[in-house]
Image 1 (tube, rainbow, N blue to C red):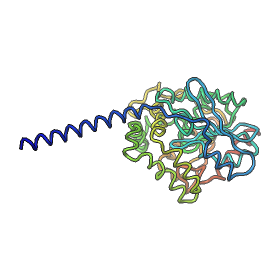
Image 2: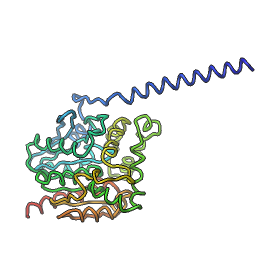
Image 3: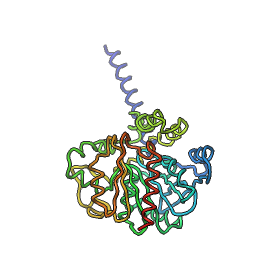
Image 4: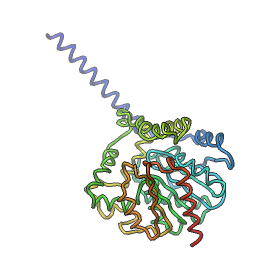
Length: 347
């Protein structure tokens, strides 16, 4: 029995040592920053230029403060700026960009943490105020006085917030599948059923790159978001592979979750200081909210509250559409964007 016990102790010590070594390297791996090779071509840009027609796309980078954003652009004229959601990147708006680049200067960014933009560890970098300042500087860099902003999911929250914070820079704003941040937090304070629907946010905020990898979160981005769009024919298999490659990095997924960590407090502890720009700021520019009635996250209450928070808001509700209206109803969403821009010129 003595020898057996000694062997068991040695095995246990070996396993513990191995676990500690793995844990050490896991911590080191998580702390290594995500690198961006700016000399490496954007595969989605290459694909779009090979398969599309007309004005070609180009890929650029814009540094502001300590961080750099990657963006893709084409065309000339009034600036339309596209802001993607989570978990995605600039390419999610390629259909709208293809349709509009002949008449407008279309620009889609990789939000901080996503695509080929920087992915800092510092959560404060992802605060809406800081990201909005970077976006405002980018608009200056693009030599535009005003911009039409289109956002989806977190990009919609960001777009509406930017219009609230910098109304003089925004000609119109189109949001898809998400309300302004101050509307969202207000609803969370008042409506327990919506808090339950959005409980996934608190779970997301507990993640880290190692946990995301261990639990297959990187693969679930594909199976939950993009594979169904490919199977339904909304994305080609080639486009699906581009999304799989661009959104499957556990470190970038974790960095992108910083948008939630920085801006969405626990629903039971929301304070006045959490609202951005503040609790009562309205959207004063021409605006519209577009949502799919089959969206499992975005409820009708969000659309109605968003409209109530605006001086000039339209609602477009789409039947048999889920969380990706701009992908599932490409032409309908593009027409709505053009219509809002046209109506803005008539006022």
